[in-house]
Each structure stands twice: as structure tokens, then as C-alpha cells.
Image 1 (cartoon, rainbow, N blue to C red):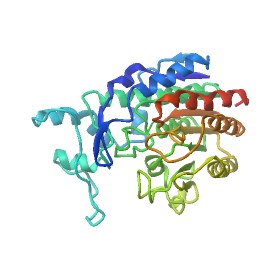
Image 2 (cartoon, one colour):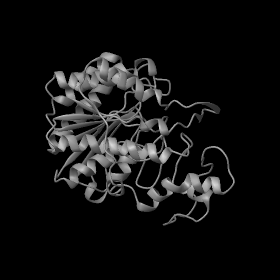
Image 3 (spheres, one colour):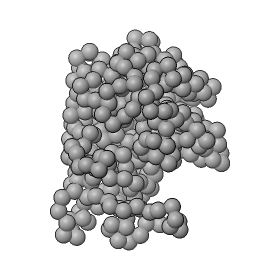
Image 4 (spheres, rainbow, N blue to C red):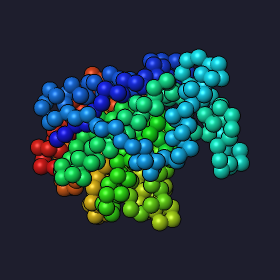
Length: 346
């Protein structure tokens, strides 16, 4: 299995975040990608390749041009306003406010408009890191389109919380969604997304919610108690042409393997029935029992079972790295999925 990775991910490091009333060291840090990379090399998974520098056009197939321009330029605008440090939003629209159909003009108002939380800041080089993460996803998709049965895009920063025109949850560009659209633009008429991250991929849902050509299935913490809140309920099944093509499996705090795997199995059955021509897996391993910001109880051997079951779908498959913050077991858990996929003949 080819792994796509770039050290350019180091260009983004927020350093801190607000977590349950405290300013703490961010859980999403460069160390994560390096740990996974080291495990990929340790087990001899396959060659590690650097993605090319792609044109911006594939990103704008998913994200709105105004949002992309905002991400590219907001740090310079922040500095021009006489502000030091990293770019942080500090207020958001409330449900009582009337809807608006375009971004406001002021810097802070636009920060509010284009974001939904304070999980990650924008630094001087966040855009470059996010762009290279998207390149990493595109390179993986192109490898599969070129005949590889599977590939692993070791993306950082992650992406599944980023929507068409907003960032949040450590995510700036939706790497998995960009890869999905790459498959579609190359003629794969139906593409499935299997999101196994602990947190709901609200951005991926938003992007494909009205589309029948992309099936999105996600197992995650119930939004009544877990980030990103407000989205991820089972009743959210898509709208318009996309009705029935969005599948959410919200699960309670403390969920263990039998309950999680039952939801996972149902999602796999639905993907098989969808008759997809390609599969993109949003590979989060923060379902692990010792993850510091998650509440599920999967253990390392369970990730091997996940990989084997995905292999049984017999689809051209791209794995795109998302979350996972228990750094001691992160490499083992992520690579367990990949090695068992290969060993099962995926």
C-alpha cells in the first residue's frame, strides 16, 4: 500500500486550545503524523511518497472560492490590523439571528461567519499546511484511479469537520471530500464515504447532504453530549436528491466494541447495497479506549477487525487520516486498520 505524506504538515501548529474552561496544549499536533509515519515504516506497509503540488481547482470543487480566499489571506489581514499572535474567532451567530446569504465585511465578523469553534487557530502558514493536506488526499485518490487497489493519505491537519465555507474542529479543508470529488470527476459515478472517527464529520455531511451520487455513513458520539454537537442525529438522512444517502449512527458515551461494530456492520451493508465504484474512509482512531478527548472503548485489536471488514467490501479504497489523540497507541491503531485491510486481500 502506498502512503502519501508531506512534512509540510509541520507548517500548521496551533499550540493551544480552549478545552472545558482551560487553555491547554492542543491535542492535534505535528507529533501525530510523525508517530503514524514511523509505524508505517516499521511494519513495511509500502512506499512513502510525497504528493505533488496540485492546482487549486480541485479544492474549489468542494470549497467556495470566497472561503478559499479567506483562508489564504486572513493571517495577513490580521497582522495588517495590528494584531499579534495567531488568528482566533471569538463569537458566532446564534440561532435567533436572521440568516444571511453572504459574508460580512469586517475581519472579526468574517471570522465568525467562516468558522464554528475555537479548536484551532490560523497561523502564518496554516493555509500552506492545509493545502498540502488536500494535495496528499488528491495524490491518494489519483493512485487509486491509476490502478492501485488502495492508498493511504496521511493528511494533517485533518478535514472532516470543514464544510464548504467553514472551518472548525482542527479542520480547514475537507481532505476526504476533495478526494471524493476527484473520484467523481474522473468518472466514478457513485462514491461512498465511511467515517469511523469518534466525532461526527459534520463538514462532510454538509458538503454532500443534497447529493445522491455520494453516500456518507458515520458512527460517532451522540451529538447530545459530544462535539461538534447539533448535527449527527439519525434523523438527518439527506435532503432533496440526497434524501436517504446520509447515514448517521450516533452512539452513547462508553460504547464498546459489540455496539460499535453492530453500527459499523450496518453501515458496511448499506455501502455494499449502494453499489459504489470507490470508497473513501475517513480514518479516525479516536474511538480508542484511552483517547483523551473521546468516550468510546475500542481496543487496538478492534482496529484490525475494522480493516478486514472494509476489505470485504472489495472496493477501490482510499484511507484519509482524521483524528486520534492517544499518541502512545496512535501509530499502532491506525496502521492496524491498514495492515489488516491488506492481509484480508483488500
